[in-house]
Every structure is written in C-alpha cells, then in structure tokens.
Image (cartoon, rainbow, N blue to C red; front, side):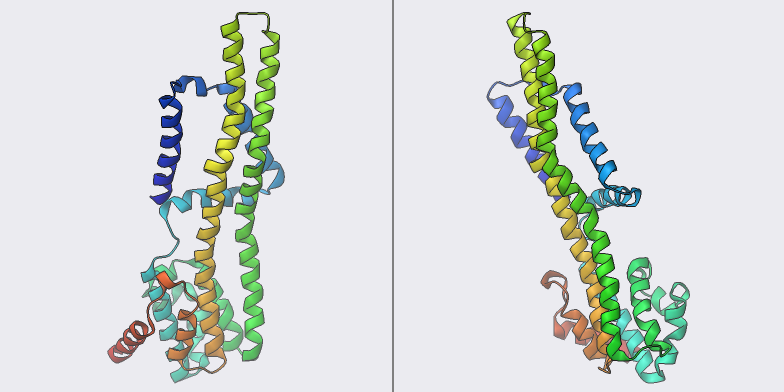
Length: 287
C-alpha cells in the first residue's frame, strides 16, 4: 500500500507540474519511444540474468506491494516454536527432536504455528541447522560456521535480483537517449516539412530522454531499493533462527537461547524481554 501511495505521488506531482504549465498529456505518450526503451530494458535483463533470476525479479517486484515479508506476530510465533522445541530437547534429550527435524512437514509441533510451518525456506534452514546436532555428526561449536555458510548462500541469492534491477535503472537514462536519437533521426528526414510537424517530432524524441530518466529515478531504482529492504526482513528471520539454534546447541537454556534470537530482530518487530519471558512461561505453565 505504501508503494502505491508513492507511485501516486510521483505520477501525480509530475503530471500536475506538466499540465499546470500548459502541457498536454497526449504529447508525452509516444508508442515508438515507449517500445524502444521497454525493449532495451527487458532485453538487457534477459542478457545479464539467468531465467531463475528473471523469475525472482518478477516475484519480488510483486511481493513488495504486500508490504514487509513478516509481521511482529510472525516473529513471536518463531520464538515460541523454537522455545517449544528446545524445551523438548532439554527434557528428553536431542534424540526427541528427530521426528520433528527429520520430517518437518509432518511435525505436529510445527503445524501449531502456520506462519513458520508454511515458510519452507525458514523451516528447512531451521531443521538443517539442528539435524547435524541431533544425529551427532558435528560438535556444537562447529555449528555456527556451518549455518553461516547457508546464510551467505541465501544472502547472495537474494541480493542478485535487486542488483540486476539497479543495473537496469542505471542504464535507463542511456536507453532514453538512444530513443531520443532515433526520434531525431526521424525528425531529420522531415526537416523540410512544416515547422509545426518538425516541432512535434522533436518533442516526441525528447520524451525518450524524459522517460528514461523518469523510470530510472522514479520507478525502477526505488523498486530495487525496496526489494533490498524486503530481503532484509527475510534474512533477519533466518538470522534469528541461527542465533537461537547455535545458542541452544552450545548448552544455553531454552529461554536464554530464544532470548539470543530475540536480540537479532529489528526494534519494530522485536517483543520486549519481559513480554517474551511472560509469553514463554505462560506456554510452559499450559503444558
């Protein structure tokens, strides 16, 4: 919704400023200029990106219109599900976690928290972190670098779409100049015609430069930046998981391990320490 408001402000301000000075909207709309710039922008993305990244660009560009990837309640559910699992492991031994981490899709514990259970990326990351500890393949102090490698891979993958969009945004003013030059070439072919006709063709050519700069700084660049913020929310969610799992694996009590994860969260998404402790202790008393 915020993005829609921003787009309305950008277009509204630009259109008002143009029409207020006596401009006519029709003089800004030229199919040839639009086709040239759009074709070059899309073509450049296809050249520089594998199909997987193109798909991610499309998906993320739509996803950001829904707002942040997680609400505060989603982070609270994450902290609660980790606490429940850690308490189970503390009471019954790490082997008690096997049925949950080996088959997370069928886990009755995970199903109690749909926002976590339906997040396949986070669910797999969580279980991948615990599996080597549950089956004894590694020592607790070896877990953190292992999870850091997984996080680095996810971060690289999520960084690629906004990087590509940023490169396209940087190129758009140049694409606009190309469209303008093509328009000038057409104009030169009609230079001996009526002055008003020549003027219209020059105006049409100049809209190419206008459109390239406008799309760069008003649309594509801001969308790329917003995708980076969107990805930050996803990475924060995974970092919370990593911090709590590593703390628990190294012997910290469940409540303390979850507190470590809480401190990773951004301030607006982070429950206070007292809120978290009250929530988790209330859960414990209900068991």
